[in-house]
Length: 424
Ligand code: ATP
Ligand code: MG
Image (cartoon, rainbow, N blue to C red):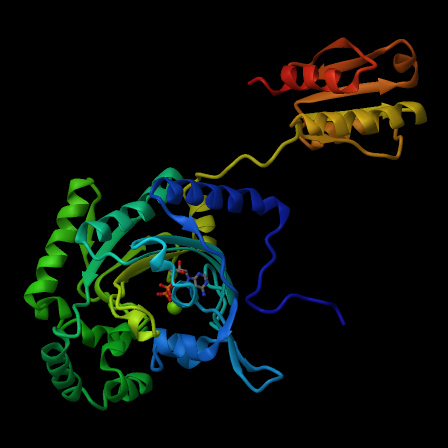
């Protein structure tokens, strides 16, 4: 039997990892500019945490979680998203007592048992950020602006869509209108919607079936039922985005697939990835910290899918140059190989990216390898050169070369060569 990865679980091979590193580096850099600090949380939690936060009657909890019973009989789940574990940690360590407003981000794998396709995997990766303890509408705009800046700095163009899901005070009137609307269509909805119509009516608006979606075009929209506080908040969020010159479009049908959202919700969407149109999404969740047993504090956050960002980078041609090496050390003869081994180590200590092999191959074969690796320089060291205290330094781009004096002081020699190589 051939050993293979699980369906929907993908290896990120060396040829792709430069793009992943670029995404991660850019995100960290931008997050830090906005005052966010990294938190790293476990990938496994008690199932109950996700049931209580994401909601029982959601796609994620009903059909997408990797859940199992451990040896102690406890139900555990691989995290399907980042907000719940981060909030669990925030509450457990009383982080609000250190700083009334916490700005946290985390980067890592998430797990959902979905049908794998382009941009949809069972293990995928998110960049996610949360702000806990503040609810100013300009903060909502700031959080969206941060996600936007990550995309801009990656050279990506997407659309920002926003909506408001109101608060518990706006819900009863809206729910009544939605119940009436759905009752009038009973029997013509898909199986899931028929069931959710009774268990969690808001969720039907999220249905992926085109037959249902078509009917919901005329469904009541929560944005038309906002209480004065929520309406004012939403207007101020739009003004905030406007102040920063970030174009946002209202999408009154956006409901999001998690139950915990209140007020502002948003999605970063593209038409370039087929059905997997969302590269990022998030929103405000003012009741969630208390709901999980923590203090009564508001929160807002988002998650961006790294696989989709990588696909979009390829699509929009904003890729990266693969990691190259600075210097290939070609040693010929056993004495030169030993000395070269020490030189390579000293140069690496000075920050130079050095490649060297240990099997004393022909010069031709080593130079071929240097070219393959994209080395900018090659240092050629033979036993004879070594005896006369010299080596040859070849500039691979210019095609020129000159002799380089060796020295007994290896550290100084390496530092001088590093200074020469690392400029430009
Ligand atoms: P979708 O509508 O595409 O299923 P979602 O609403 O379930 O997305 P969220 O839970 O909001 O997604 O997660 C935030 C982001 O994580 C998404 O915008 C997407 O970029 C990414 N994402 C979600 N599920 C997957 C997956 N199975 N594979 C790859 N990326 C994903
Ligand atoms: Mg989904």
